[in-house]
Structures are given as C-alpha cells and as structure tokens.
Length: 414
Ligand code: HGY
Ligand code: MN
Ligand code: MN
Image (cartoon, rainbow, N blue to C red; front, side):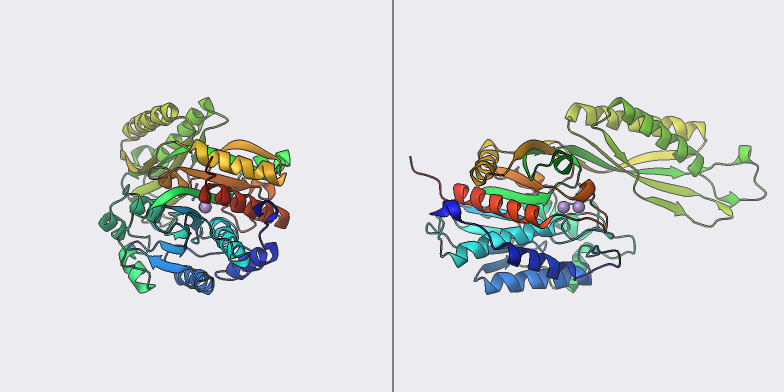
C-alpha cells in the first residue's frame, strides 16, 4: 500500500516559500538569526501549521519545539525528525528550514492518507543550530542531549550584549518541559548538502554516513595601543602583525591536510577599531574541520604552538580560547539502511557521503540511532543569500524521508 505513497510536493514548496518571506533579504536569502524577532515569527508559523495538523506541541526550557503525531503503539519510542529554523545573518532559504518543513510534510502526508504508524512520529525544530549570534552552535540539541548545561546556555552573550536566556524569554519560547528524555527509537534529519558533491555528480540523494569533526577557537592577540603616525614600526606591539603571520602559518598547516582540512577565519574583532590608532587587541575566530579525530588533535596542538611562537616574536600576549570541540560522528547502520532502501525503492540515484557541515544530528546520535539525508544545492553554495535547491530535489528528498520513516516507524515483524 505504502509503496506508491508520495508527499504533496506543492505544499512543501509553498511552505518553504512562505517561510522564506520571514526575514527575507534583498538578495533572496533570509536573516532569521536565533532568538530574533524574525526567528519568533518563523517559530510561530511552524507551530500554527503543526497545530492545524493536529499535532501535540511541546516547547522545552531551551526553546526546542516538538510536534507529536500518535502511533498505534502509543507507549513505544517515537521516530524523531527535524532540523532548525534559525539562519545565518546572510543565510539561505533552505539551510535547516528544509529539514523542518520536509518533516512536517511527511506528517501531513500520513494524515492525508490516514496512515497510522506503529511508532509515534515527532518533528522537531532545534534552538540556535547556527551559533552565528550565540556561540557555540547546536545549542538546543546540545542541551537536549546533556552535552551543554542549560544554565550555561542561558548565560551565552551575543556581540551586542544580549543574553540568550533573556532573549528566549522575550520571544516567548522559554518552555517548561525539561530538555531531554523523550522516548526516541530513531532520528533522521534531511538537509541540503551545503557543498558541491551531489550537484557535480548529478546525484539527487546523499546517504549520509557521518559528520566531520570541528574546533571553534578565538585566537586572541593583545599588544599596545599607540599613535599611527608617531610610533616607529620597530617599537610597536602590534597584534595585527602577529595575527597575520599566525593566519598564514595555519593556512600552510592546513595544506598538509588538504583536500579534507577546512580552515575558516570568519570574524575579526579589532579594539579600539580606530584607523589612526595601532590596535591594542585583535580577536580572530577560527573554525577548523576534518573527518579524522587524530588530525583535529594534531592541528589543535599545532595552532596553539604557532600562536605562542608568533606572539613571542612580536612581543605581544597571544592565546587560544577553545570555544567548542565536536568529534567526528558516525551514524547508525539501521538509519543508513532505511535511507538507502527508500532511495532505492523510489528509484533515486544516491551515494554515500560524510557531511562537511555540522548538524543537530551530531548530538542526536549520542542518544538515539540517527541518520541524515542530503539533497543537492546549486553550486554547493550555502551560508549565502544565493543558496538554492531545485524543486525536484526538494520533493525527491521529502519522498525519501517519508519512506525511510515508514520503514523505521513500522518495523516488519519477520
Ligand atoms: O556550521 C555549520 O556547519 C552548520 O551549517 N551550522
Ligand atoms: Mn543547517
Ligand atoms: Mn547552517
């Protein structure tokens, strides 16, 4: 009966378009950073759709939103699927949102066809996946799985001095449910690849086997403020000069681990930030990723040595603040198989892959068998307002999610 089941593609596409209006930017992207007014409006719309689909809604103390559809065996553990609604400041229309709305579309399709799964289905929108405003990211799933402490998460402060816990209260999403402990049999997250592989190979479905690991650092360089005109170069304690050589050396270090190593210096905070004053302090953010834990550990120790050596040479204080470490993750064979079966049964070409981007599924994998599905995105572009995905791929992914969930939610009694 279920073999010919397909999602309502038009409904999925129209909801993606409607959600993309919230925080829409001139270049066609979205700005819905975590716990902003725009994030609130997006959350409200998602809950409105879930309530119309007769879901039971729960919001936990870190603002994660769960929408539950009962199964025939109400006491059995649920199949959980979802992603995040928050975006980068210059984000795209599909990063995260696609995983949340494709999950809702699966639930709606089951409603349309009056199909009751054995296991209940829960769809989820996690708080602050991106970490763009409040670092680190994966806050909602990290608190849910016990990796992050709730009070520490509440105390996170953004660049403008706003506090995460207060912003959560302000937008009305400081729920009452204690994070964690929901009874989950398996979890799936569908997402755009955010990289070039699927599109280059002309393959619509990625069967994701795991996620590479990552470090987030603040590289801090502290020198001495001085006059730009009167201070001879040799007398300066210039944090920028130290940072420039550290950055160059880290790029060279990463060349050793090419092509998989990824070094990103995403933000520079200069103090006092006056063009005619030699800066007193420079903070450079570093996001370093690689699929192998041993390489991550080596690079970690090398980065620290490089900062120490260059700071001494430049007669300044330099240090490394480690913001976050996420080890590489391997997903569950059961979930990988369910995704592979669904792609094969639907006749979609697929390929195995490891995710270059971080996802909430990384933390979910610590508490339940977890897997991911990827679809291509144009030019592999993401974290960019021009992010785009093709309708046929968005719909194909939704159908794979539907059938993978049916397999996991209705285990065949042999
Ligand atoms: O940074 C990441 O990998 C994710 O897209 N937030
Ligand atoms: Mn994402
Ligand atoms: Mn992202």
